Image (cartoon, rainbow, N blue to C red; front, side, top):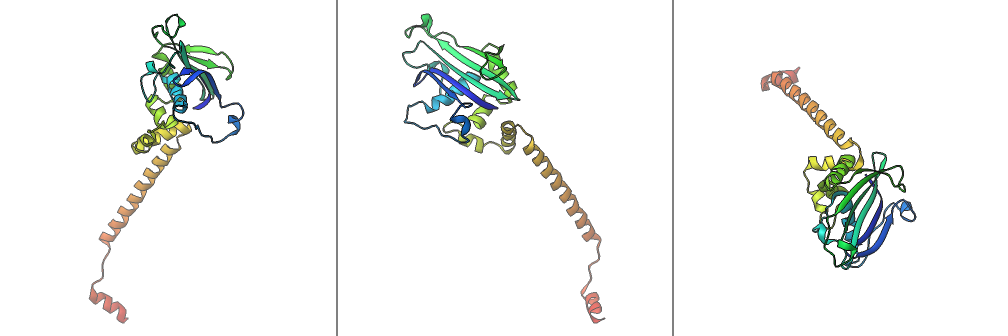
Length: 223
């Protein structure tokens, strides 16, 4: 899974519309970058937008409290690539009559399959249950796996490090898109079994071999 673009509107401290395009300069020329800023500037909100658009959840609270104060609507939209295909997943919510004082309305979600990152695409899912399920099927990552591997949100880095060895291997396979870790594990298991069998054969040979007593040793030395 590769994140291509994040489009945010009125989420927490990030008011109005913000676009982070990883396919355009300067980010597309940068192998490594950091999200920095003062407390409350919206750094973690960018990460919230990712999980909100994909799974209708955020790591640090209820999704019905994420709309910016004084806003009439909000959305989080993520364009991503998985399996050589491009998709756009969107979460949106508004207040009644599109006014800041209106009652909060139920959220909506939609997932589109795109011919390229800039196209409108074809809607392939449009319900609050179907979109997260489809995202999981496409990426191989459910919400918990995403948070422990791709996202590693504030305070949750230890969740990946403390995962069971088998679970870490599965997560690494999901991230890299390969089975190298599973293959290495199976190869190590086979080699350990073969070496154990060799050791057992040597032990059996030792059991049936004749050990010379002191008199036989002295006789051989005298010759």
